Length: 103
Image (cartoon, rainbow, N blue to C red; front, side):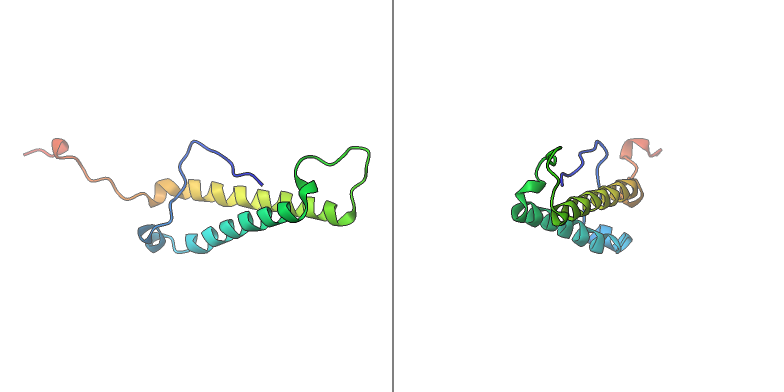
């Protein structure tokens, strides 16, 4: 499972962010758990790396593992999209510069 790379920044977990959106804490834990689970599955079943052989049918446990890895990747992408969507909403308000204030 590879992490998607995007141009839009994601929301960084900080105390200020969690004060504004506490539900991001558990989502960050889930995202980390998905990465750990994917790494563990790749270590346990190295046949998951790469595409299946076109003429050799895979055993049912490997087919199920591929399906689960695909669903885990899709869920990780959904979490990342959600965090990128929230980024502008959770950004701290910009303070006006002193040049913009009329004296």
